[in-house]
Length: 137
Image (cartoon, helix red, strand yellow):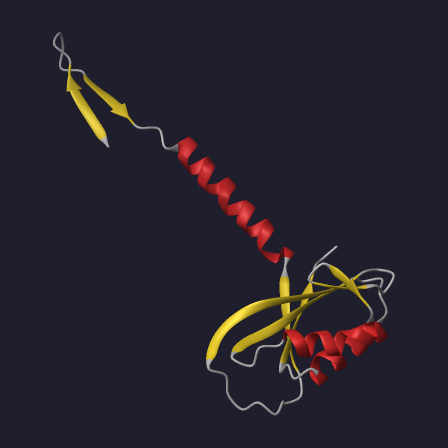
């Protein structure tokens, strides 16, 4: 927006300009922060074997969070459990009317065998999908 004022003493034009530099700086800082934060969480979608359930009535997603720590200990919704209990607990918590996709947070120092056992337990519980959440270093 530009305002022009005519000076009383002369024909000199005086211009008042709005300085947009601070606004542009703020926009660039916000843009750069989005660029830096976006790749921090990436979801890798794993399709499991098909289950006996053919359709779901409600397509809402409810959170079942499985965390594997570096020592291969397992947490289900922040509650410690044993691997042998995982299948039965998941079967109890599974609601066939709601599309539930368990999310697996697997520590990079935990073994692959633990991941495979959890994947098999999720599949045996009747879930069709498993989201593996990857966090970069």
